[in-house]
Image (cartoon, rainbow, N blue to C red; front, side, top):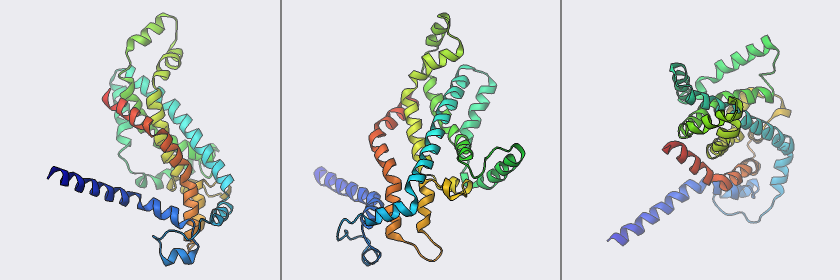
Length: 278
């Protein structure tokens, strides 16, 4: 009886996996079909592996410029989030007073606010700041990086905060006795110990920033500034949708992040587990 139950459970697990993987199957198989073949049977395998639609999709997406913009936005945002969030979390943990506790609660509380409730006020505030300061918060990669910092800081501070609490204070006190100031204590002692959670923050934020469509669509209006998710929108017109080209474009857009995630997924589990347990 137990053997039968185990077989049924395994079959159910396999069917569940197939349901989760079905969107990936549809995107990959339909990227090699023409429109007639796609509308004939969306679930069937392609008649041939023709990469012509990938070439056309790359030309229409201006893939080189889009990849360059996505790389600049993602790498700069990750760098700024890691540096500022790790330093902020360290000070919040080590300065144990009511102000630091309130600041941490504010960071945690902002994780609960959905982006859709903030997007219109955010655009109004950024437009006003651009007019008053002259800084390009709207329609610039700088403005997009600045907003990514705001939306990514809360989760990063939360993860760093849990990890830093497990680092013995005696290590930092020993460094101070040896003559280190606070700046050197952080960079020479604390930051190297944060490697697992730093990798976790980078992977999670990279997946979010690279694939983000809504915020860049609000901030960037110039075609030369489009990121890869924005460039895939060129396949969806008001009256026609080039589904086969769109599938090829979507596959090109998600391919780098899938490869990166598969290569680094063990660090996500390790970093989240370390932060949660400690």
